[in-house]
Image (cartoon, rainbow, N blue to C red; front, side, top):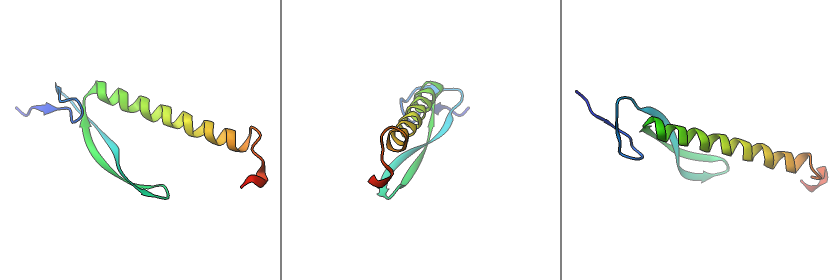
Length: 74
């Protein structure tokens, strides 16, 4: 029997979820990633982080282009 452990918290589990985690920023939107296998709990945390980042991104661009952001500021 193969034992599986979460790469993040170390808990033994029956199944793992594969996720990609940013590793190194190369600048200009380019970065390297690392593949990790995580438990269900850590996968939910990862999904929450991605959801929060998506909301932040939309909010930033909304503020830039639609809430008082002048087109000539670019």
